[in-house]
Image 1 (cartoon, helix red, strand yellow):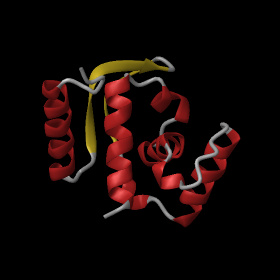
Image 2: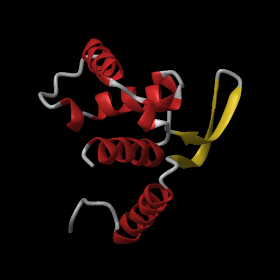
Image 3: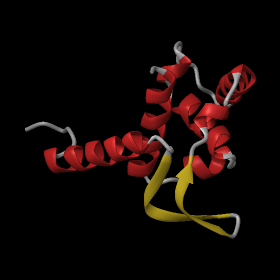
Length: 116
């Protein structure tokens, strides 16, 4: 028996990812709203197009300060989370508190954007 994610869950995550990506406005609906600093978030708007080289370097530096030692930043969940926070204009701590499903989706969207 495999320890991987059940096929139905993979399909649902894939469909949601494709929906977010196809809309291309980078609005990521959260499967579970999150309350952070007295504000409730039901979605995150990732303005990835506004990021520049300084944001990339700052995200790399911040992820290293958090203990990230992954040799390729664009493959590191920590780096992708920091960059997502910059794109969403929210604290990194908010991204880190997302549910596992939402965290995975957000970091996948950022990674896909970087590799387009």
